[in-house]
Length: 174
Ligand SMILES: Cc1cc2nc3c(=O)[nH]c(=O)nc-3n(C[C@H](O)[C@H](O)[C@H](O)COP(=O)(O)O)c2cc1C
Image (tube, rainbow, N blue to C red):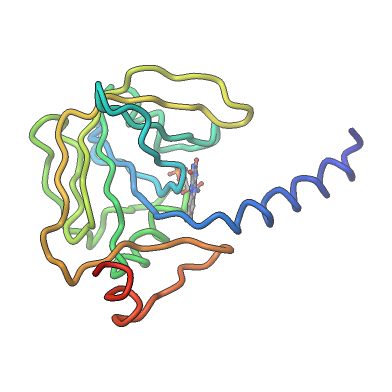
């Protein structure tokens, strides 16, 4: 495929795939030099028994190698109040944890970000090649969901974070 054709497919690919709505999560880990984290939408359930999840991470990620070295990480499922957090962790480099409240996960030491919609502590099982990404499968060691029924997840659709109003959420959740 020529470079131009490849670019056209790549742009179509991004646009078409952006029509698949997802939640947003921040993967975190505690490296030897401090906490690291990055925003992903590729988080999904993989296996129920044993409980496993899957994420795919770009090979250019600077935070993932730090997290992967520890063998353990946390998935912080973003709530709709955390758009700024999701955007901040989507920037490469910089002091991402400044002003972010978090506590250490008891099973992983990974940062559990306050006000998230749900938290999962995970242990890496396998890493596979996936084109320009790595596919990571992980065992779930512990998990917890936010118990505030007024809290709702952050959504990502067509490269935006659509904010459903209270009435929409009430319709969906009752
Ligand atoms: C909504 C959203 C979803 C994203 N999903 C992923 C993803 O699934 N995998 C990935 O590698 N990067 C994803 N990114 C991009 C990373 O967050 C971004 O490349 C970040 O700069 C990586 O930071 P790092 O270099 O510190 O690892 C996403 C970004 C946004 C805003």
